[in-house]
Length: 324
Image 1 (cartoon, one colour):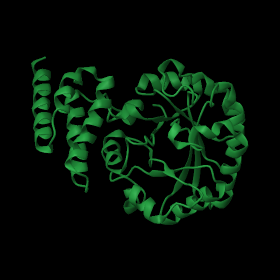
Image 2: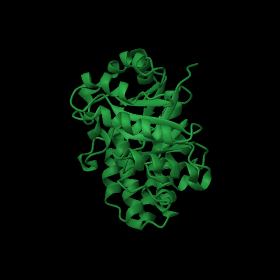
Image 3: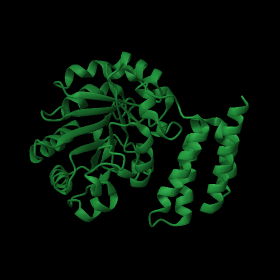
Image 4: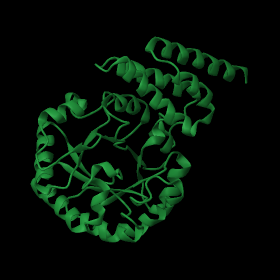
């Protein structure tokens, strides 16, 4: 048996409250994260936190009991620290600082700050000193802005005493999500620079074998997973070697749950269907056999027809399995 821990990534624009509810119910994750909460020169309001993080109503856990960590993004040390305090006063148990988001729309935040190790240090140090020690603090980064040779300086800058974990996405900001740019091995020498802070490996870890390979190269036994949670709804369990990958029928059943969970919110029918299409769109990236059905599903405009299509396809998948 391994001692793997698996985290569900923040997934901005993909894993909001309702989607986290579905993914965590199946995933077997040890921790999940909110989408980043943007902090400017003004502290974040309680209203914003409560709106964006429905898990506040459940002791900062998803309905299945997966703990949630609140992630903040910004460049102002003082307002980030004050916002972290507000988030924890509302009920958060831990805070994550996002220096890994590669989007150019975050401007002077996220991975854009990897060019400024001194500012990174100031932010992390200020938040850690301001936040009560009983609340865990973690930091998410990439290997660098332009080149992975920047990683040692970045890791040293954020390795502030009292930080619990550093999650490292094994690409630079310049690399974005290019498959060929992924470099798990770059993490290995960074352990000796953290002062004992645990490193969590992130990037294309979507199976038990990939986790084993990543462990050998990185010396990490904690992993963060992202888009792989859509084609493998039970990804956390799969990585831990506790379950086999879901058959297509169960992936499709999960899509039904996506529709049901989003339908229970105030979102419009179009939004509900858009989120179901989003789920299936990411699922078929790794489960190409879903592509013909996905094309048909994308033509569907209402929930009733969408559910009918899914139920019919599930019946076909289950029948084909029995025939085999």
